[in-house]
Image (cartoon, rainbow, N blue to C red; front, top):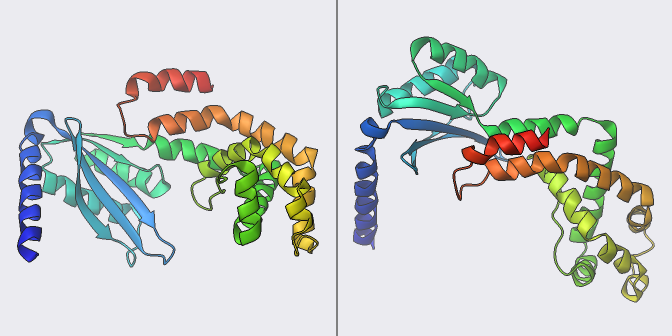
Length: 264
């Protein structure tokens, strides 16, 4: 088993080395992705893009680091040196304030482009939309409906039967999921109403609890559905652009500007 693993590793390394030989000819883009998990472990991934292919370069655990502009800048310098500064034409990162400050420092030392991640920028736009009180209220109400359905086995079974499947749940981190979840909920409006009007629901032993009655009233509320529809319609153009730039099936730069024009 150990020999097979070594063979796979050597084969993969040989493939990566063949890609690296193209770096000096095509030049490369360094892509940086930061992530913090539920245990507060914080990591930064570095990928290298060249000639239509992307490879993983390294991972850095920064959980115990002070992630200020100076630290980010020094980390980036190290990666640029590892790749070869003569090969690097662009760095792509998220659009956080720390990375912005690090960009200013890096641009003074290296002649390269530093580009904010389009998906992250659009996600921040949706975050700003979510600061409006009415949006906060409706998203929270949608979360209450889905959480109640998924936290009770009998209700979940009934919901899947009436809706013909699952409902996307609003997320706690990625802001776009809130609006995608609202659209999903709107698509299943009729199924949810049928669920609460069904004989199975009337016979459900916990259907008179305070929480159950609140959720039933919420699904019956025309104001909730009207507000949810307005929010979903107003954010759909932004969400479309986000889905476009967040995919990896084909290059999208040719259609990006037209998508942004339609969004505005």
